[in-house]
Length: 288
Image (cartoon, rainbow, N blue to C red; front, side):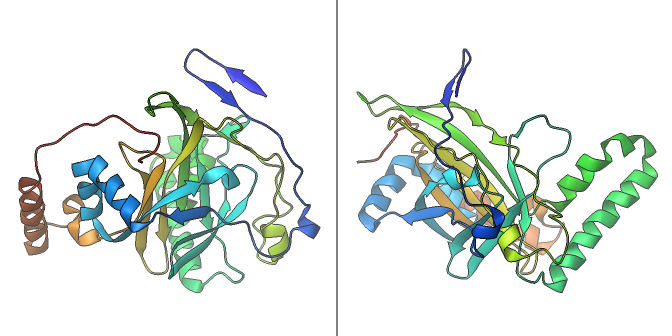
């Protein structure tokens, strides 16, 4: 299927029909993230300069990977292994009120048995929505959307990039939308089997033109460990991604007034002062 506009040419291709829920098995497909080798990492880091350093400043730990986000399009549940001890199964929840597609792949954590801590956090988020709707009754027309947004524990977006094969320069084409998938039976029931939860559904999505690639950006919160993770593109080499565990002690705006905030602000100012002058290189499809 070819969709044209003045800003983009996107190619969506139905390549395969995935197994039904009864045949899918218990393991959801994986979001593939491949680490780059150390020598390549140094070239990527040098090309992205201060923007790379600013990103990892806010991280407890990080890695640079190539990501294949195709798996998000045809599947309702995926497995995302950010680090050895941060391995999640995420189940997509679609935003109500949209027509045929969503701009983001929003999800909640999915486990064979949902820990009590997650259930408690989810109940609190819905209780907060109840309180808001009670106070602002005019917002009840948006109740479904508000309850959906309060449930989100992971959120991804995808952008298509096109590379000029003569120069290697890349330019973003457009944000891609995720198709609405057929609703699984009783998706929110607690006795839903793993095979039903993790079933793949058509259509499949592929980028059939080699000079184009997909770039992923997203956030995952761990409601049990109270940690936040980012998958973000690198500004001047968007084929490569940073996977970060955020360090909340370095986010000045999230800290209450006091000694911790003052110290974080002083450290951030010192870090910024020690950076070399900014440079803005060409955005490259690959780093050789």
